[in-house]
Length: 205
Image 1 (tube, one colour):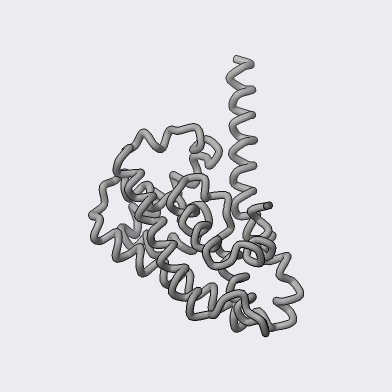
Image 2 (cartoon, rainbow, N blue to C red):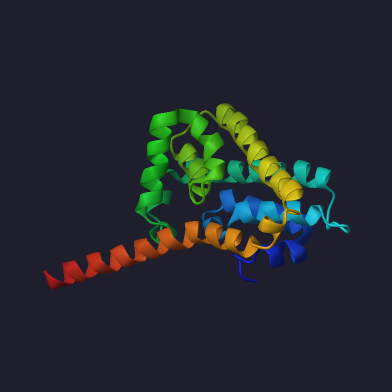
């Protein structure tokens, strides 16, 4: 299944599938390909239908828990493997810019970064990893991670639940999902282009 097809994913994966996706998005580096914002909004939209795929209360409980557990996994990976994890092959696909931006957030906002990074694509995948690499106090990380996961999941699911019935939004969901997907695809594409140009420059010298 196309990971950007939020509607198709939510419709077929169910609550368990949603929990797995949210776990992977921050627990494993490959999760940066998933547009979690769109998936959460769509989950709220589907929960508001006459025959919902899941009750709203279940989504508001289960999804933040899955997101927080994913944070813990990402944190442990960063803490276990240290800075070396930032030089792996997968990081080349993510690019240097998101890492630099995430580090800048940490420098400016400190541990609070763990909260608001939840609302920024790719950055929410990198924050737990970098927090582990930096050996941020785990108790503090867990508190901020729990707050961020709760705010992120509940706000977007609730937004989908109450606003999904608005005709303007309901009729233009594809544009919302496309916008979310582009926040991931465009940085990746720019990174690939820059690397190819750099390779050509080095080859011509």
